[in-house]
Structures are given as structure tokens and as C-alpha cells.
Length: 76
Image 1 (cartoon, one colour):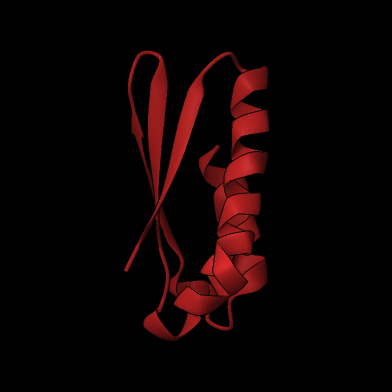
Image 2 (cartoon, rainbow, N blue to C red):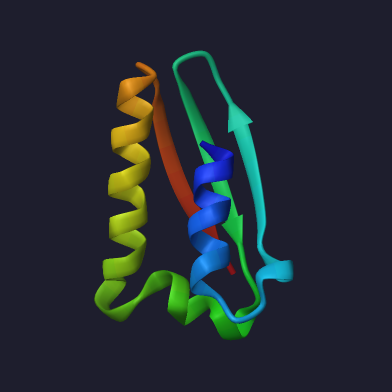
């Protein structure tokens, strides 16, 4: 899951070296925290949150296949 989000975020931003993804794993769910450079935050969120929503949808589909639940948090 972590690698999937990191791959998508690095493809979107201008500063791929500033992308930091951490995963907090629980028994049934995991929280994935995404940090990017401040100037790239708009690119990750997208217009009206569409890009972030799309990333969450892809993450949800991948986590359902593994029978887990994953939540994406985008942190400033």
C-alpha cells in the first residue's frame, strides 16, 4: 500500500525527493500518511480534491483485495 501511494505521489509532484510516506499498521486497518513539499500540495489534492479522491479510491480498491482497510491522510 505504501509503495502504491508513493509511486502515485512521485509521478504527480515537481519535487519527488520531498515525498514522504509512512504507514501505521493495525490489525484490520492501516493509516497511510503522505507528506509532500508545500508547493506540491495543490497538485496532490487537485481541483476540488479530485486527485486526492482518486488516490483514495485506488487505495481502497487495493486494500479491499487484501481484505484490509486503508485510509489516506495528506499532511501539510
